[in-house]
Amino acid sequence: MGLLDHLEELRKVLIQSLVAVGVGAGLCWFWSAQLMEIVIAPVSEQGVYFTAPNDAFMARLKVAVVVGLFAVAPFVLYRVYAFVLPALYRKERRIMGPILFWTALLFYLGVAFAFFVVAPYVMTFMMGFGTETLKPLISVTSYLGFVFRLCLGFGLVFELPMVILGVCIAGIVRPQVLLRTWRYAIVIIAIISAIFTPPDVISQVMMMVPVLVLYLGSAVLALILVRKRDRARAAADAPQKRPKGIDTVLDLRILQNVPGRGGREPEPESGMAWDSSTANASNWPRSSGRSARPWRPSTASSCASRPATAP
Image (cartoon, rainbow, N blue to C red; front, side, top):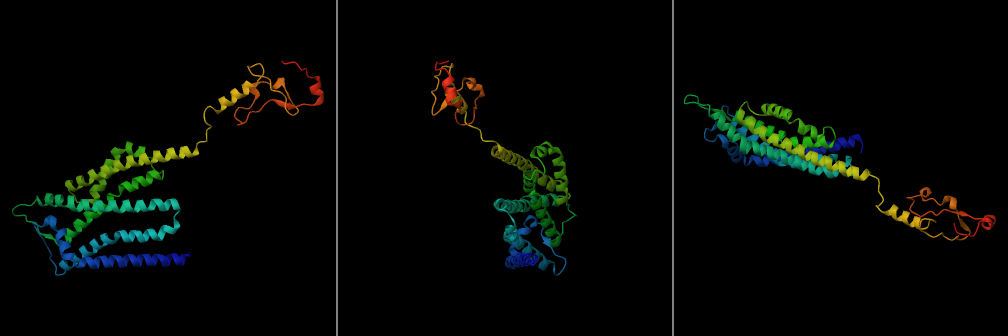
């Protein structure tokens, strides 16, 4: 395909992805009221308010679009994968499927963990600072922005295992280095948690703990995979060794035919005579796969002049 054909294919992929997101958002709009109740469940006791006439409409539209995007994300990833599939080798095609699957699964796990576990605890902790005279009045716009940013941050940081496995298998970083530098990893994870979470201790700790577990687990998994790959490469590159005992058997058969070493002198066959000067087993080949006997072509003069007595 030429450049214009690739651009045309890319345009189709973008249009189909946008249409899929629009269809998903349109379907979710019919259940936007129920979805809104689920989203505001962590603050259902205090309630949320809208201060502008269009805030309620925009809030339901945001919820429908975000939920629809999450619902059709696998289809969008599949279309992108189908676009780049012809440019991949067969080995790369086999690994791209599992990579996309685990990438999407980890992202959804991060979003679910943030929404169902982190958000309720964070909201309860933050609401606990109110007093009798300091009452919470939460706008629906600010609340949705807070929840969506929290879910997006957890979804992104849960992709850390895929990043670690990628850089280790590619040979950029060795897994042993990641395991030895776990102290620095804790500091970096703490900084990332402070960036992606609200400025409170609860949400930062609740992000640090699972991300640190994912970091250590992915480093150990990368170490196992890299060692297994190295052993497979070493076994493939190693030369083929002959079975033990072959050379010994050949030596015994040769020594049985050597005069003076317990064997009998072989009789000349078809004009071949025994050469006593070469009757040394150390001069014979050991691993040629065939027994080479020290015969030499005989002539009429040499046979006539050689004594008939045995050595």
